[in-house]
Length: 287
Length: 344
Figure (cartoon, chains in turn yellow, red):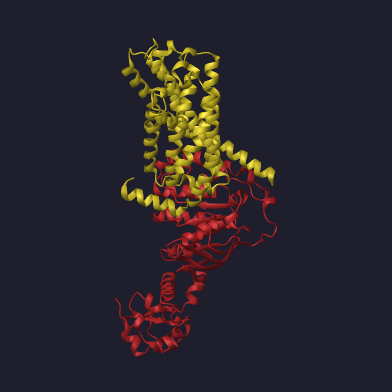
């Protein structure tokens, strides 16, 4: 029994990898999706444009170079959080999740597929940051430590945000409500220290910012890519690497505990009738 | 694989439902549904909208938790069905726009992977994708994107997805809604193939009475949350005294007699014996539609008399005719009959 069960789960996980690969390929052929991957690089290019020539107050350091690592951190969080939330809501409405439920171990395949797909598309977004990033690359630090840290932050960041994104997406009743999550994300970005150093904000806002992964992902990326002397601009004049791993780790635990519960609750509600209802609503209202 | 199956699984019963009840809030949707399906049987679940067809099927699929009653599907309670159990079921869902970017073959290949570990010496799983594409007539569209398929092609893909794991039991919820007659015929052939060659048990819901009659070994009529009739189309017609219609031509006039009795033979015998000039004799048993309408009407008017089935069904107004002919069935060429109906 257990041997078969495990075999079947492995088969489902491998199918999930195939799913992730296929969906990534499909996504790259879809103009709408590809534009989306360029979002972060374009935002960064615009930011650079406004920051041209300005330097970090009190230093000679190029402000744009300061922002690049923060954007890297933000892309990880953004890709991991809003991407899955949006697709889960759509997949529930159009019956994708119901098909997964009707397939033996189909949910495992589905989730593996999502992780692979969001992992790879987020990587694509990050890679595209190189284009505007070249203009400030001279100011940044690139060594073995940088890549090591970035890799860890990427993996931890996806693990911390994808389950939360999945859970949040399951809570929304319709696909169109995921817009709320985008708004929420934007609000969090303001207090995330990505465009504006957190140390310059009121203390209570600093605490709000530090409760969420965005700040820590940005901090981690800065610690990887900025020269060591830039640490003085951070809270407590420290990269707080241990705290970063701690907070992201806590989010991972929360995500992996909460997401399966929420997902199970949601998929219990998914049925042919619910899908038909959503279809009728969309047909009638156009959304 | 089979080790996860409880040994008490009955060899010949695929579905066993006893006193199934479902209540949403204060609304009772199912008020005691009982039926069984033997292995290899094709069952059609008929009933008006809101009768509880979809609810019943979703409970059997394990997608909905029932309020009360006993249900065994392939020997397991669907509420606690494990993945090995799920691998033996086929659920044909109505697609809408899911997996629109996938190519037909990609999607079937992907879904087939999940069934590989559930292959047994008796049942080789999954279907080979090429064979399956051929069986549902999608070979030419194998490399097309799902969203580029026509309604009928997409529906056939839904069926292919439902049976890719070579299920022992298939649920089809309104399988041919929106089919043109040609696609419908092809689909019926596919269902026959499944039940004849693969010995697959099939439970389908439909609004199309003709389809139910063609496909199903047995028809269940569900109304107001309970089964009001259960039998082959033929048995149902017999069970309901909807009678038969006898038509003939005499002296250049067309006559219609609605025999309210089950067996029109005595009437016809007397008719032929008394009138030698009869031509174009035609005996028509009540159609499934007549029976269905009568059954549903009877259920909705609170189990009324069984004999009045004709008034809900007779399309040509012969329902109001002679109670005497109905009572005896052999009041041959009575005045009533002569006067009753003349048609071109």
